[in-house]
Length: 153
Image (tube, rainbow, N blue to C red; front, side, top):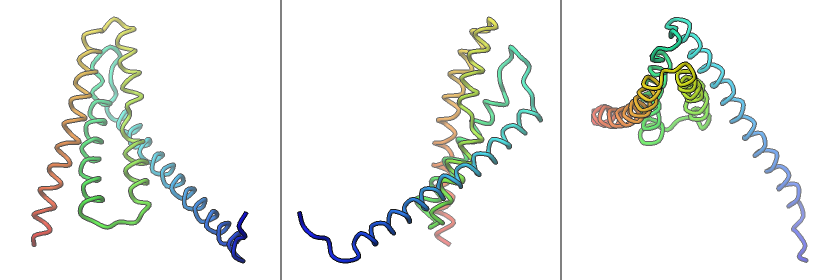
């Protein structure tokens, strides 16, 4: 067994405390962002309620808009701007993760199926997937084009 230089254990303990604080900070900003995103989604569901047995337009729109914003945001913070290390977990994971709601999407599908609206459920299943993938791609593509023109100035 080799002996550690004096003070190595103290340095390792201090580094471990810093890592723990950093992880707690990330968890805290995700939690706060998630709460804000969930409140925004709840507000959307109150402003634009969906009648039972009909196409869940509110959840569909929230997921499509959230996916678009995720595409724009991730391009901006990974390819263009240098941002605070907590912004991505706060906004990307927290706010947008709380705003988009693929769990409600699944519950909506199950309810439509249980209520005998299989065609609506299958349409919703496919349309949401297509809309979300199209929106995130369009957001990323559009952000790259717009930010490239902006940075040329």
